[in-house]
Image 1 (cartoon, rainbow, N blue to C red):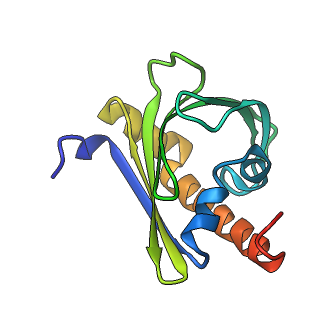
Image 2 (cartoon, rainbow, N blue to C red):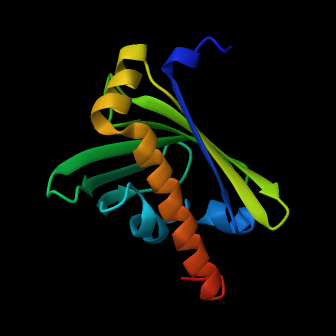
Length: 158
């Protein structure tokens, strides 16, 4: 058991698309805004730079009309294998968490894993119990899978 196990959420999914295409869906704002977030959410971006130390500043709009300010700073990008990020409500958020996404080729499919490590067990438990983090993460990867399937249907380019 890792030293952070009680602060982690791990979600994975097999996506029926080549790893490079799945990875590309994370690299551009025009892609992310089409699928990011749980079912029923939309995203409005105010700043985006996909580079190490670059930031993505956005608002997730919930299906009930609630707005959730979000901030991500990319801390590692290894194309097409891995993306690491710090994710909070704003730059300097003391409750920000680390997420590491890995993209593993599996024939013509991709196994994507999202490992999230929270600063404390209590913050992880709150994310699960009050914000539906596990279900929301599964829905987000489901939205990614559907978006990538649409990309394939359009010749790999949207």
